[in-house]
Length: 63
Image 1 (cartoon, rainbow, N blue to C red):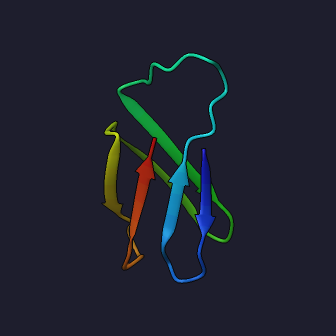
Image 2: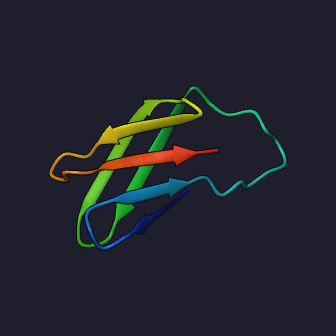
Image 3: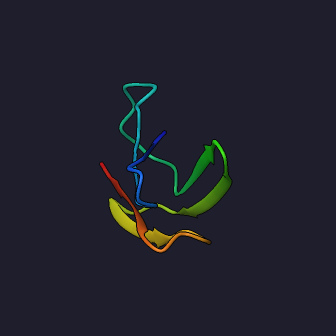
């Protein structure tokens, strides 16, 4: 899992595959630790947006 800070409170997350298995768990855990600590657990969708606690913009994940 990789989170990229675009510098404007907009985060883009993308999955870095660790195996050749294409199956995904029903729950994904996103952990972002830098100046801030964010740990989210959410239902998996191929594309979803979630508003982070103290951010105004959204996080999108694409497969």
